[in-house]
Image (cartoon, rainbow, N blue to C red):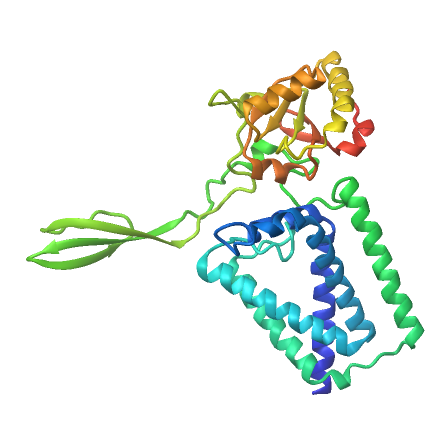
Length: 365
């Protein structure tokens, strides 16, 4: 039992630290995932959506601290109880998401490691078993550190987490795991390799033959049946390859200009996924930066999921010298964790990406 507890302690502690740090690197992204869970049709808790970011920061810091406290042996009873309650809740959440197909990615490891709903649930079941072992054998959780040292180590971890969270909230994630990271080419990210796995579907055809219903299953071809066709049920039995970047459009008046714009040698994108939530005080600085870019031969565009009335109002209020295009809100949230944020591209390759607090770092050549 002692050795099982020792293994579980190291495995759970390290995993909680890694998982928590990945989400701590991008708390805004994790808050978007929480909003998805809180939304109508999932947990139906829309009143929590405005607090998603605060909950996100608390959860990820607490997750890291529990991992540290478990490894150093600090407040063992509190730590094990907290781990147990947390994993029971997340096991329920991942099962609910998987069984009812509500949320396709739990966000357990942010954008670094994508897990399907059932993979997430399986991971939580394994953790639940290990944490139950820790709960039963908590008397075996000792420490080589003294009481004061354990307090200091936990406090240092807390301070570092707060400092790191503050930094990424006011700038951008230090490590960018998304397909829109600096150096990535958007068009290449949308390509599907010739040898990529194709989706496989199963078709259950229902016919009426001699006054009796008959179901014939095929992988797509229409069956040769001498009877009356009633309906067909389609089931995806194997997922096909999905490129890292998909559903990327830059639309205006219903026309997609993405292909043409991604060929521009000098392109600046001002991204504001929702103008109702955007940091309006920064648009005076954005005007200065975009005017400089225009003077140096750059094409500048705005990208938002807001309606035309809102975008035209913003352009008028701040005298902006560029037009806005429509792009899906989820895509814009994925591109940059800032509202607004600015990207500089060359033929679809992202050269610079900045938070609105870092507009002074933009360089136009």
